[in-house]
Length: 285
Image 1 (cartoon, rainbow, N blue to C red):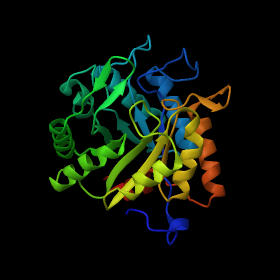
Image 2 (image 1 turned 90 degrees about the vertical axis):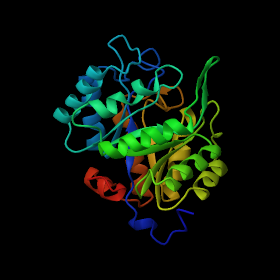
Image 3 (image 1 turned 180 degrees about the vertical axis):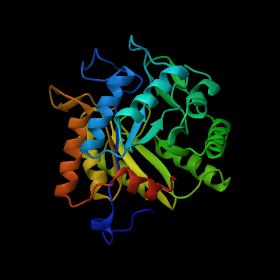
């Protein structure tokens, strides 16, 4: 069990991740969602100033279409390096059911500098009526091995309890370096239903030594990320997961969501981790 009580609660620095863009909805859902590289970078700068220490990146074309184009990812990375100080950059390997295995990991391996971390979707997920992301064990092993060789920290995406044994398999095969870093995702289509007891169940079954963050989609974002703070975990917010600030009120920016999380953490007496502190906590050089 990765969190055994409140003994160290007030000393545990809180890592705030922000997912600015995502690969699904775009400006048609919220005109404030950033799409172009400079637009994303300006948004990330504001998020870093508000307290975010990690940014999760999806690339889009100027027309808003999802893409794995290497030039686009490089342009986003270059813009973030220009606008931001030290925020950790996390590239997605999502896109199962759309892109090939090689296309999904190419931006992680072929941009310079490489991202600090990258996601690994370690089990199957349905999207909409016709799309399924398979994410087989063989692919997970391959991604973990390639990321280790590239010096990139894997972020394991846990969509439901059945993905935790797949995480344990990567650990047993010595493909992950401690501390392990994972995201507990609630409210997706074939993922874990967004309920407090389900977050506790996921946390209770994680292997040690682990650092974990939670995200929840839509209206579930605020209550379940707040719960994650009280459990001693970390949080991910942002317009990839939730385009609203409150009911019927669109978020003005990703930084607005980060600022709210930072205020809540302050009230709950969880100090905010700087990017440098997040690197140390996660074992990233």
